[in-house]
Image (cartoon, rainbow, N blue to C red; front, side, top):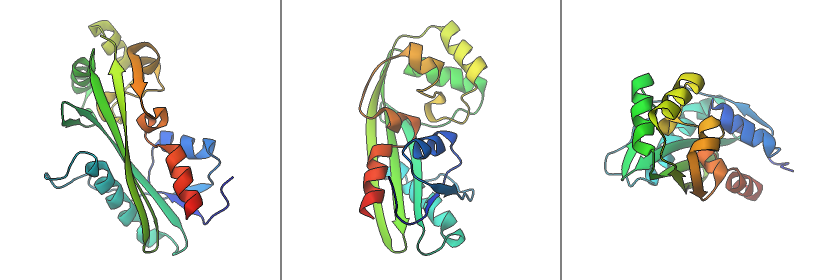
Length: 189
């Protein structure tokens, strides 16, 4: 059980909150809206780390010097292109159609900071979707409205149960936080 300094989660993601709660990490949420931008020359594994660092920096002034800030960002990568959150229903359907029957990668970048100390890492999980038909894709989009999710899906929802053939890597990473690694790093602080 975590007994360290207070943890500040710099994310409004209900999935990240749920994962920290499941891991027994007491935390508070503090969020300042930030642009999720990155320099174009960054390597894919560095992009979510860069965005997570921006999220951590945005809340730093709201925290005590002894607080540990945890920030994360998740990207979906298909054929070396980042797929973000869908703009609307049609975009979500298009994204899932491109992911159907294919392998893609989910990369989550994490920043853990306390004062000048920082740990930064990314975790990659490969996800293999079955071939989905248009009816399945539209059902999922219309019933689960995945507009706030990178790649237009959540593995823990209906589409994960019926549409994902396999994963190689951390399931929780696909949810948005490689929680076992986060717990390990927090215990080392």
